[in-house]
Length: 347
Image (tube, rainbow, N blue to C red; front, side):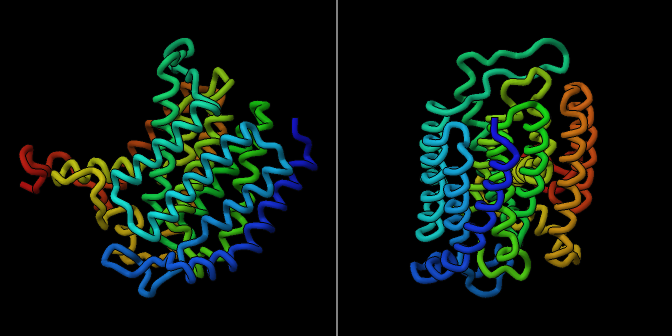
């Protein structure tokens, strides 16, 4: 069991190393061409360096050496592969298929030699033991978190702030469950987020890039797999889904929206959560504050109800219905009664 001193030391190292190396990562990104050029889908109007993930990884590695995180070796290997894949994509724009294949390989290594979700709670009865399904379902969970954090990374400070709030909630949850190893891992994620956020908040001086956004998604997945979904009979999938309500809702709406329009699910568009609020007249900072507020509320509800599976599912369903209504109102998806059966067009 990690003691409080170890937690505080890991937190301070994560903050200080990430903050100290972010300016260096920014300069290096500019030197090697890791730059996000403006385009119709982007918010930035000038080229922006996208090397923030390198500083986050360095802070995570330094703190992990002191904190003795669980499954240290395979976690570092998988995190480095995810970061490298994202950096290559930022520089050379890999195809969606190639990037997803790389994610699968990195996550497969992690799941084969790291933790797995072996059972989940059932609000209607006893625990559901996954057996042989533990590998594919754990992979699906990690891949989902990697991609939802990447999908929502469209405004200064949005992904990092959501990660910070989510990691605080996961730290609290893991600690109350007695999963101190997972809590330590979550504390380090809190630290790297705090160290990077001042450079990434509007107006940003450096972006996460795909490398940084996917890395944060992987780290949140590692925390939830180690702690919130493992070893406690009362904790189920509804808890981390609630904690990550904003990116989960955004991904769900993106899938529905593209099915409605009859286009490939992986096809990019400009109708994500942040795009729609900007189109409604919100400023970048206002959109980010709204996302922080929603995340803070849903994460608090998740932690409060975590030990009561039925209550958590009821809260998740209620908030899901509310978020769905809000998504329709802001134009992220169309009501089903306004979508034709054939081609996804308004009738």
